[in-house]
Image (tube, rainbow, N blue to C red):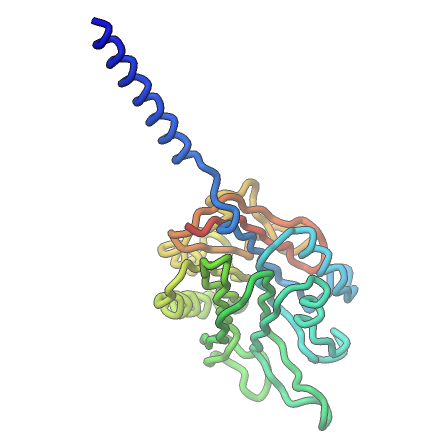
Length: 281
């Protein structure tokens, strides 16, 4: 009798232990070394809605967000007087102590011999090592003479980032603002380019499209809209400081869990940034 009782107690105890262990495994917090905070931010070449050029203000927004990796759009590099011919990506990287990669859409001859080329495009900042970088081409609408119109142009940068031994592909984009048909074409091209990625994928940028647009629906067929998954509120980002449209997004592949997503409601541009906290499985 005593033996049967002891056996019964042992079985109950073992089942209890397994139950606790199972709960702990299911509820375990994500390993910190695989958690990354990604910010997308159209900085409007450093000019806020008040018309004031202030890169320190932009840097302050990024710093306050706590982002580990940043996708920037509308970045000048020795462009012209509107940004004082500053290399904005390099300047922000220095202010924030982050690694920098710049991807021009336009690269024009310098204003005079001996000066650097005038460039405009996108940039990626990272606290983690960047092991690979490429500036892919997309069909987009050029606004510069003499080659105006839809054509293949660079400006879709890809960075492979090493998070404590776990790599991710970060793609940064700024879709055309004029024609929905061109944006849908760009969405298809981006999916084709991202398809062969060997590691988890994050796509961030200014999509110039509302959440119900066909180009956004197409991206959602493959990727998770991180704000839709874990954000609260309307997600409006443009035009700051009183936004009425959601056009800035962060998407993630299925092997990434979205822990949080929010709009960074702090002024530094005519856009608000979007910050998503992600766990790379």
